[in-house]
Length: 326
Image 1 (spheres, rainbow, N blue to C red):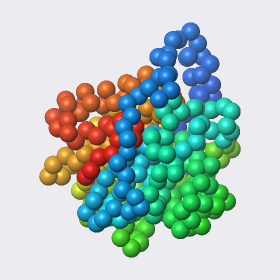
Image 2: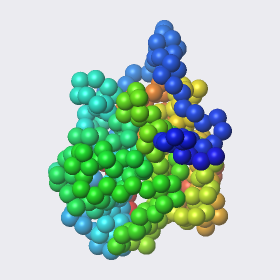
Image 3: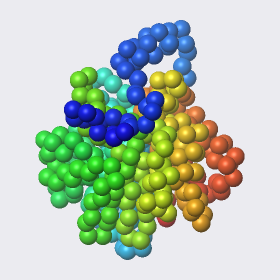
Image 4: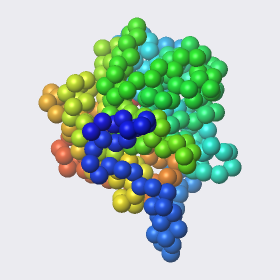
């Protein structure tokens, strides 16, 4: 079954992967949460934070580093190439400024301290991944940077000021001087209003640049294609996986991985690799989107990681702003 929806748009092609609907959302918010005491959201900027070690304007060939800005926003410095993933610098993940999920950790890299951005990778159109004010800021400051996005997002990006929006379907590749990026399957959904669900595609990205291969999962549940991604586009030198926003499970299981799912995805991605590459965990610790305690995902992931027998040094659960060299 294709991920292309009959009559237009997109869907998850695997059995039992239809995302929960608006009625389910109301049940979660107003029935299941009634009388329950959720763990409090952490105080503003109370989680661990580090000073980024960013090379500006560009690094030399052979210098490869990653800096976690927060949530799914990561700065990759792969030699002289600077890549941003799902950039969000706004205070809220919302179409408006006065309501919606609010950051409890500020962006760990000041926007003015960004190096020259050469490529932006987008996974889908949800507000915690595609933030219109941030798109406009980047488009003004780095007008030559191409934005690589899944099918259907080019029009929105161009409306926000992006000069070069490059759409790709699953398994299609963008080739440019010094970098190759392949759009890969993800299990999720898209929407920015109540009436546009599935009109645009969602994806992850596999990138090859400066002699290394990076996998950015975007926003996804556990799906059957991780092994195929690793076989076709690996072995990877860095794997970036989401580990948060997973409770209640009945509501989130078709769209977000929990730590156990992330372990399974990593295992499939690295099958046959000579050594376990670093795994950068993301999609936690920035916005309160779901019901699990904000600091549970990395602790639970670390426990499952150790049980799998992989070295702690390969579990890259970073502090906000932390930079690690590959």
